Amino acid sequence: MSNDHEHSHSEPAATVVDSGSQALAEALRSSFAIVKVVMVILLAVFLFSGFFTVGPQEKAIILRFGKPLGEGDRALLDAGAHWAWPYPIDEVIKIPITEIQQVTSTVGWYATTPEQELTNTEPPPGASLNPAVDGYALTADGNIVHIRVTLSYRVEDPIRCVFGFAGSPNAPLGLTGTSNAVQNVLNNALLHTAAQFKVDDILTRDVIGFQDAVRRRVIQSIEAQKLGVAIEQCSVQSRPPRQLKQAFDNVITAGQNRSKLLNEARAYENQVLSRASADAAGKINIAEADRNRLVQSVAADAKVFTDLLAKYEASPDLFVHQHLVQAMGRVLTNVTERIYVPDRADGQSRELRLMLNREPPKPKTETPGPSAR
Image (cartoon, rainbow, N blue to C red; front, top):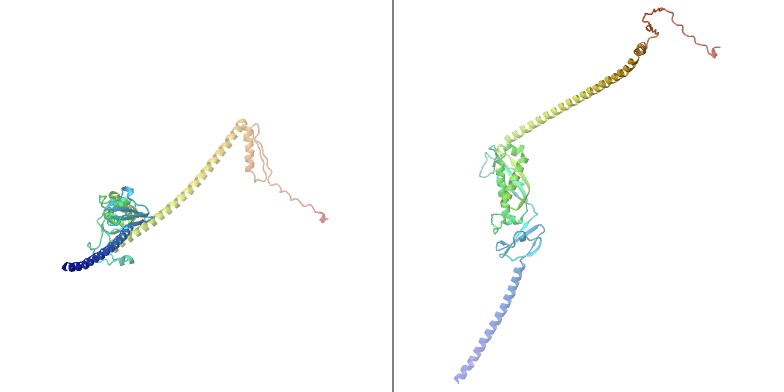
């Protein structure tokens, strides 16, 4: 009886244990199914997040654990859709290849606030320059000047731009690092070039030459460091120390007055020289004309005498007689009565008798017309 009683009590207990295990197994299977679905969804989201787009004015580089995929130009991705493993496996660096970047020098200019930059106003000069706050540059003649340079550039070689700095191809520089490197090059070029020029050349006399020198120095440094950028524009702004602004203004005014007086003197010089040249040219032209007329007249007279010489040599007496008659005719053109007595053929003198005080000729009477009859 006792065994039957114990057997009857063990069967319900086993049934309860089997039901609990079965419920637990079903709960676990449901949980595992949900976890699998969530993991699949997360995996899909993870993989889908690796898609990215490169713009038409960009290049992209994929870094896998910090190293580029591909070498040289093969590491560059063109415009379009691409895929990479999400971070931290892969990292995508996009490089704008046509966008103009701009940096401004951080040395050589006095301290200003953003509000003063927007309103283009200067802070008060103070009693003296404070080197701890105000930047400056030293010139070749030992003067102090404020200089600020703004540089515009674009990425020309993305590979060099990203990996060409710091001497390690596995240590990418990135656009921020490139900008900082270009800014350091610009600061160095500003201070180095300012030390080669005098203060008057920087401020007034050779502004363009100083700007070109800064640009050349920047280009040389960029090529030496292989930053992979191309300079588009370099603009330089230079000002004297604010504490000495009035003195520099006086020097500039004096220089302008000097230039004005020199220009006026040169203009007067050119005017006088032009007038003198015109007068000289006029007199030379008149003299040349007189000379030509005189030469032509002498040549004509010589030709006439040369032509007459042959006639004279052929018959001297006839020639003299003819020309004597012509000469006398010209001389006695206005004489009322002319008497010409030629020499005798035998060379003897002639006797000439003149009747003076003759009666004047009577005027002719007019013949009466038919109406007078």
